[in-house]
Image 1 (cartoon, helix red, strand yellow):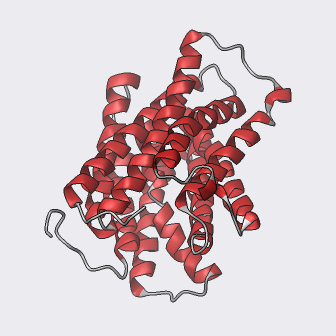
Image 2 (image 1 turned 180 degrees about the horizontal axis):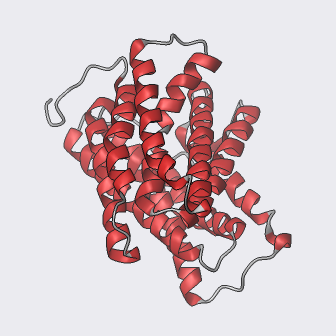
Length: 297
């Protein structure tokens, strides 16, 4: 398919839409986690996500020809890390407010920057060091109050941090295999392996789903798949540096979801951690990029 023209407004709208869809997915997962085992959630979320992703690949004329690969080992590593991150993320979401789980996911670019230094022999810059220190300060502000209180919250924070670490590892793998593999193939094999990983848990005992639970799981998958498509298109229409400021507006939706659906107001720790974590993530995301105004040609 020919390269799409630079259309920053379209890219920004698609990025904001992807944030809403990701929040919808997380709300469905959190609601379903009250009565549905973790592995069953991962399976159905991945299964239903295949539908919009396959339709998108067909629209781009990348299905099935675009699934051919020269790096099966790379796909296996990326998909394994991504599937493990999904398990950890959904387990954290069952224990934490949606906003806090989403905030800790913003650590991924910081961990990627540090992983690039440790694994890919990239240079440790002052900007990366500052990003790490800010992110660590934000995590400390968020997590320390839970040390003397609810053990479930602490477990949720640790699982969310593990999910961010695994996601960073998965994306570092993407950075290496994307030289020869298409984005469609990378997304398809990740979703397929996640579904298989969830299916493996079937012998451990799955719940009998009623209509409500099935609808929640179906929409979790459809929202997740559609969110991935919107993000992919946003990055085709606009540069990363133009989209980065709108990455953090996406945190509005989890806060509103916690308030409107689960009756959870943002904690003091969340409000204090928010600027620190986002500042660290922003430094890591903007490293080496020249900032451009969002709607400027």
